[in-house]
Length: 228
Image (cartoon, rainbow, N blue to C red):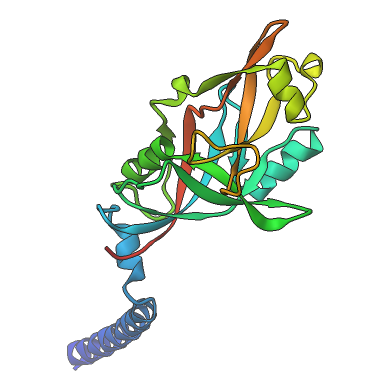
């Protein structure tokens, strides 16, 4: 009689355990189903042709950040007397290059808001586009720009003066914002759109300075992954 009673109590306990397990399973399935299929996309690596939204920090020739979507990083730099341009998240198509030489990226200023655009050069966009393949949601990666060392220009004192810059006040490491265009023969009075590009003074002599407009690396973080 005692053995029969113990078996009955054991059966009831297992019934309760199974009932609780079934309830938990139901809740988990219900929560997962409410997420849709986006979480599955995030678990898989990025494939060719997928639209991907990224955060980024672009580094100049000296290794310091030049443009970033990280507002805290920009604020910290400003508090120390530095300057990092606050950029906007951009959408990149994985492993697909752009036809134009410049890919405009919105950036923020207090006077104009998000109306101005920064110049991301085609090799930089291409490096990002190919470099994000295989990354997953929220992954971060440093992407190297192979052609950055060739983006230097010499500017004479007269050229700088026309841009409102006094060459005698420049020192190595100073940064200058210049207007760039897809059209290399752009005239001063042209109405063709120009985009901002930050260059760094890397050499100086009595007649001219050499500016480096190349960016050796870009840190990229995956914000969202779309469909192909």
